[in-house]
Structure formats: C-alpha cells, structure tokens
Length: 237
Image 1 (tube, rainbow, N blue to C red):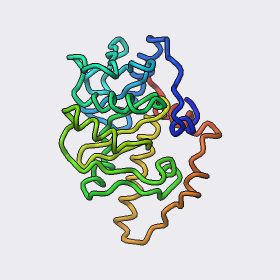
Image 2 (image 1 turned 60 degrees about the vertical axis):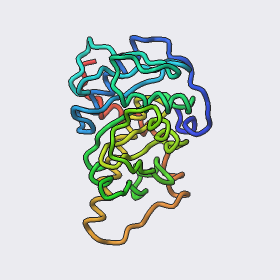
Image 3 (image 1 turned 120 degrees about the horizontal axis):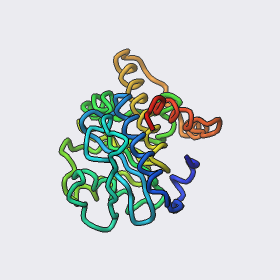
Image 4 (image 1 turned 45 degrees about the vertical axis):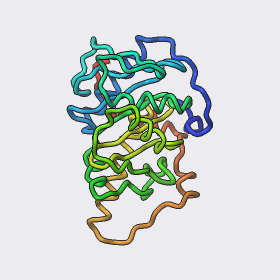
C-alpha cells in the first residue's frame, strides 16, 4: 500500500505488471468485503493495471468468488466488455479522470445505506472518519448507474475526494490501491455507525476540525496494513 498523499497530488501510479498477483489481490479484496458484510449479492472492486487498463472482479457475489475465477481487464477509453457489470463504468470514469487512483470499491455497507436514506453522509466524528475530511458528497439519486452520462456525472461529483455515498444505493470508494479502498470502505461504514449512534442519542456532536482531521489521518504505524490484515485474515489465498 502506498502513501495517502499520492491520492491528492495527481501522481501516476507505476504499472502493475504481474497479472496473476493482481488477480489474487482483487479476489482477496472481494472476499474481505463479503466476509465483513460490506457487500452482499451486489458490488464489485477493481485494481488499476496500467495507465489504460484495470482489472475488475468476476461478476458474482464477492464473498463467493473462488480462487480459480479470474476477473476481466477493462480499458478506460473503450466500451465495457460484454461480460462486465454495467456499473463498472463508474470505475472506468474515475480511473480516466484520476491517474492517482489505483483501486476502487463499489459496495453496499448497511449503515451507510441507512444514513443515505436520511439524505446524510457521515461527518468527521472519530479517528477513522478523519480520512474523509472535509466531507463525503451525496449522490442524490437512487437509480443504478447504467449510462455513460450518469457515470461521468458521478465521477465529476467524486472529484479529488476518496468516497461518495449514493442515496439508498451504497458507496463508491477510491484509493491508491484496492487494498486501501477496502480499508477506507470499512472506515466509511464505521463512520456511518458512529453517526447513527449519535443521531439516536439526540445529543450535540463534536465534529473534527480540518486541522484535527489532517493530523489524525495518518498512515504511520502500519495503520492501513493492519486493517487489511484483519479484513483478509483466513482468506484461502
């Protein structure tokens, strides 16, 4: 996993030349998301292979993807292959605009879904929420992204951030690598948990300032690596 600073500075990631290694990483990411309840029958994840291509997981429930089932390579400047799920066009549009992004997760975290039905996204209320400062935008449309035009609009809303919450329709998270995108997806869901707990308590909350969030959003001490190890523990690969 690489430094968080790369997500904001426009640096083009190095080419990933080992396709077999990429297949394993994407399968492990998919199964981790399924194991921890961040996806169910729906969702997908991908990893950039080079400047023009990315690898998306097999179009099946992510937690059930076997070791021998490979994903599909998608070009960022061509139509989607026929065997790829329609919403993978979200990945394509983000990769096209963001050369710094190396991995994307499209997921259905239950608490983030509940919060989105209130027209809300998680605020920066605890340490894990700090990585989304200053805010997470809301895509205020419950429909599936099944056209290039809507995918382009979604990518425009995504901007230079790392996450979007879709009203009643899950989340999209992008990061330096698919491993980091999985970790951030877990962080986003935990942020939604905190938000819902605070709303239920009907008490005033203390939102992190941008200065506090910037200081807290550290990568030192193997912060992301340890969460990745936790989320993938026991994976067959």
